[in-house]
Image (tube, rainbow, N blue to C red):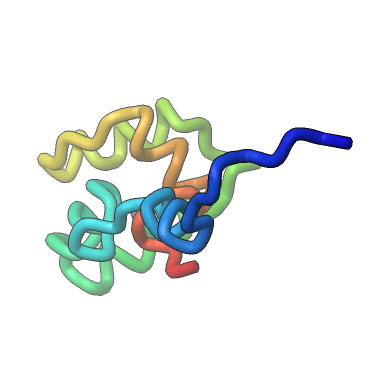
Length: 87
Ligand SMILES: [Zn+2]
C-alpha cells in the first residue's frame, strides 16, 4: 500500500502556483498601448505574422518607434504565454 503524503491543502497550493499577471499586460502590451492606434494595429499584425517576421525584425520595428522591447517578452507574447492572455 502506497504511503500517503502528509495532509496538505491542495487547493491552497494550486492557488499559490497561479501565474502572476501584474497589470494584465506584458512589456509588449504596454509598448503597444503607447503607440498611436493606427500604428499599433500594424505592429500587432507584424507580431502575429510569425511566418513573415522574425523576432529580430519585430524588435527592429519597436526600436524604430523608439520603444525598447526585449526578445524574451516578445517571444512569450507571440506564444501567448504572457500576461496579456487572460486564462
Ligand atoms: Zn503580452
